[in-house]
Image (cartoon, rainbow, N blue to C red; front, side):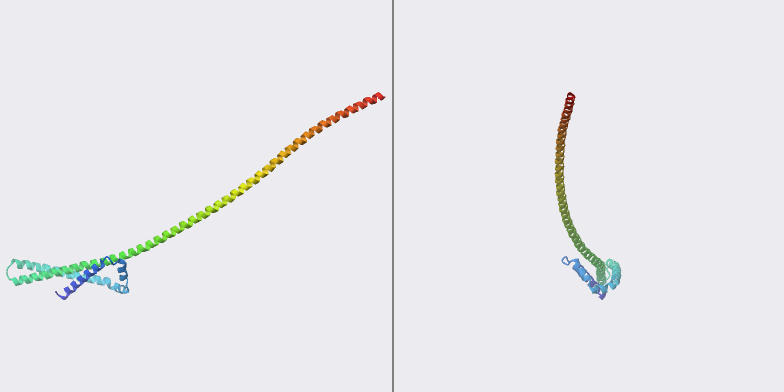
Length: 238
């Protein structure tokens, strides 16, 4: 295996190891997010896209070269297999075909896993952000619920205070109305008593007036009788 294919195979093993490491269930996405947020990655991020595209181009070139080698030695393998010329040449062609197929698989899987690795890192980062946002939203929702409960309790307290004040005010007003009613009843009773007394006084005065009128009439009658008697006595004396 040449140096370039050794490097590609090592790169493939490293990709497989990283993918398996990212897929471990006991490492949460938040931990990877903290690792990805190191200052070192921030410095490398400026060259990351260029390096990513460069590696893709190299892997594509190696993949196409491996495809070309496979097609080349496959056609030679078919020709050598049909002709029974030299056994050594046939085995050498078969060996080269095997190496070409191996290189094809190595470059193809390296390219595939490189794209998968990039997508996996992106998904882990997005999942970590979503989980962080979920935690923030959850804490905000809990704070909102606590604030709502506190406001509801304060509202209930205010309602109870207002109801108590209203009841106290209504009770005071009712007491005042009852007192005013009692005062009005007492004044009405006094007025009725005064009216009854005035009526009795009027009846008494009316009775006395009638009696005095009768006495006056009697006196006038007696006076007229005395005058008539005196006149008769005077006439007899003459």
